[in-house]
Amino acid sequence: GAVVSQHPSWVICKSGTSVKIECRSLDFQATTMFWYRQFPKQSLMLMATSNEGSKATYEQGVEKDKFLINHASLTLSTLTVTSAHPEDSSFYICSATSGTGLDQPQHFGDGTRLSIL
Amino acid sequence: GNSVTQMEGPVTLSEEAFLTINCTYTATGYPSLFWYVQYPGEGLQLLLKATKADDKGSNKGFEATYRKETTSFHLEKGSVQVSDSAVYFCALRYSSASKIIFGSGTRLSIRP
Image (tube, rainbow over all chains, first blue to last red; front, top):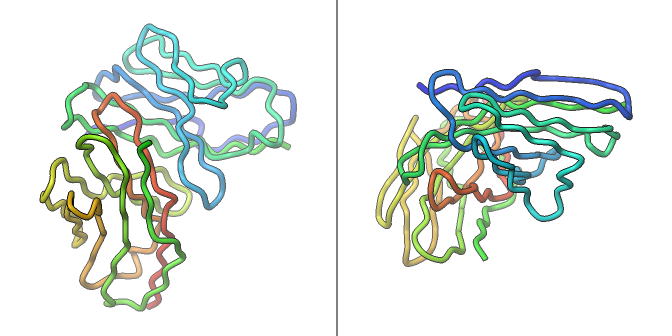
């Protein structure tokens, strides 16, 4: 079945550094990718939607200069958390889809746990 | 607006017990409905889905029926196992290119 690979799975870094998370579709072309954020014991909140070759659409309240999203190819989207601070520590999950029909599923990556010290 | 409300957890059951996790939704039009499962430290896996009224989604012994009249999509399993311990999310979306709206999640723990 379709697989979405997310890398790294866990990252710990110092406050003030930038962290890049990759989301790859391994066996299909992902025309649309989504980035979610999940705080401990809470639900997933959509951060942004990205379509290949165009600028990402951010949800209300998400700082686009803080969370840079690039979807340069049909198999790769990246989320860069710039100048990360402890409050950015969270579980980030991407999903990807190859079509627009109702039956086209969204495939989720395994998530990236980001810890900012 | 569109939203999903599911029963709060945690839910703790003994092995082989019957499980129901309630989910209701508010939406305009006719969304597809989903249940996702998240095991500790992992991402989300699609458990089952239903795309129109009266459809029943099923997988791994779990079932849920799309009830338009009650705007519900309750998750059921006749006999739970320890391996079913996870967080379950009810969700809706309108198309594959649209965002998924998740419920708050229900943590399920099964005692041996």
